[in-house]
Length: 231
Image (tube, rainbow, N blue to C red; front, side, top):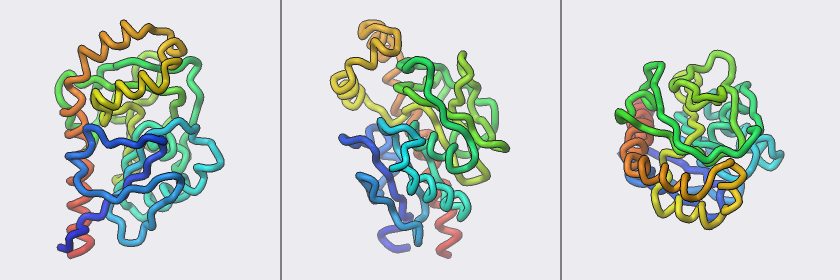
């Protein structure tokens, strides 16, 4: 195998992109910023991270088309937050604006077997910093139970594309930056900094294990598929 095996591309949307807890399980990747998209030719896996944009923003239409093509080609894809919303949009699902911004932690309950999203640590909680959500496309498998309010948490399309609405990759440094960068988000979510930080203190320590489980499993799927393709 060559030094670039497997070839995984990551699409960033934030002005201050980060990997957080996802860095170690993903390993070496090629990064794409500012609407510059990767070429799918020779690509073994694709990850799309979160951002402030809405999935229906016309500027994101080329990425929606790219994701749809990756799904068609069965190139493993993992979408996080905005990335999951784009996956839903690319495969016939729906995007929606939440009635109120969501800033909370929610316990994850696995309801379907899945090679990427299914093997999570006991007691894992999902970190939400969301303004939008999604409905998975017809035929998708929802891997996690929906929390109160009916929002979809995580799903699989076909056998090679996954999306999660929450942020397993966020570490303490990143979360501190979000509080500093979006101070209005706390009030818009109907909570307080004290209550939000108390929840962080209870659950943030488990983020690394959750991220390792999800991104590590995705990377293994990419590696196994690439090994077969490049054999």
